[in-house]
Length: 404
Ligand SMILES: CC(C)=CCC/C(C)=C/CC/C(C)=C/CC/C(C)=C/COP(=O)(O)OP(=O)(O)O
Ligand SMILES: O=C(O)Cc1cc(O)ccc1O
Image 1 (cartoon, rainbow, N blue to C red):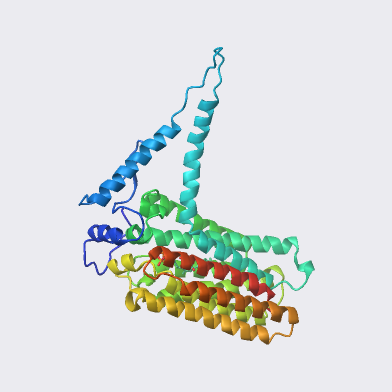
Image 2: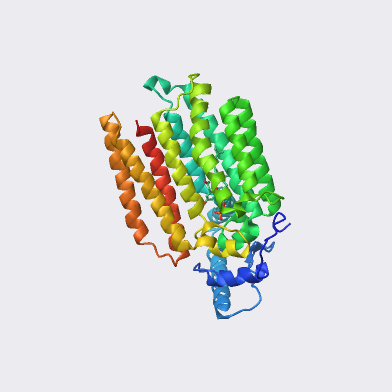
């Protein structure tokens, strides 16, 4: 099973050939190779495709050198006995410790990449932040609140890992071009391992959601599961990521509506047993995150134009061009900051007014200055700006509990 019944609808070139050509054009320092494979002897081997041009030979030489250097630097030096013949052993022990630690650290590293940490941080921060909107006084910081919050965060993170993991399972071939370091695309995880991880995380999320017994929490998990599945899965009428507007609506529904409303309701009605009241900061958070979700949905595809085009994903960047989408995203975020400044200015609380106005004005300025210096011809520069947008997303959730 190479990827889960992925059938690119508009293949102009044969996928492996196109992948090799695309990889050659990428501004990654990577040779045009097929996925990294473990050859069973612990050595990483790369199966080079078709032509072996000078770049490939250079890369192969570099990798051979790196491998032999790696082996040399790990070769144990015999210090098992000193001059008087006494046994020393530390090198063997150090070698054993390294051979135990290395696979553990590389599995942790692969799982870290598989979990798409920028989305995990966003989910955790957003749920903590909207939960704080339900806090009315210091006495609300009770073990009851902390338990309810922890349950919601953990269940949502499990679902987050299911959603992003399922996406990688159905995108193995696309990610070989767009995101070759993801563990399914690189071959570090087999599809069977991917299926096992996503199944376990979906089950743990629903198990926890069910055990907690909070209707808003359970529905939040269920709707996110349905939308996350429909977004990626390759079945008739699904794989909504192919349609730019529907794909953006899925992300908007979860990140703007469900996260704000359902997680607030979980704390407000299930944990605190208070009536549902949609306060000004909650409405602000939902409106602001509507802008932000659209920006994330649009922006995440800007660096991926190559693979998306080959596999028939009609993203906005594929249809309109990277430059247009980039500046639309910057414009949308600047508009959201302008609305936030205006809304802060109308606050009746002086400290909240100051924090909201000044905080958003600073973020808007930083965004503008950073956007102007991005080299739109470099995939690395666009990707790093995308990660900067996630940092603005985190910063927003630090400001939201201060909005009154
Ligand atoms: C459970 C809760 C409340 C939150 C989960 C938080 C998440 C993951 C929200 C996103 C909702 C959603 C429907 C996401 C689908 C988006 C997805 C998996 C995008 C990846 O899209 P690609 O275009 O394949 O991007 P990459 O190339 O970066 O993989
Ligand atoms: O989480 C999200 O809001 C969308 C998303 C963005 C991304 O860069 C990778 C995965 C993903 O789900």
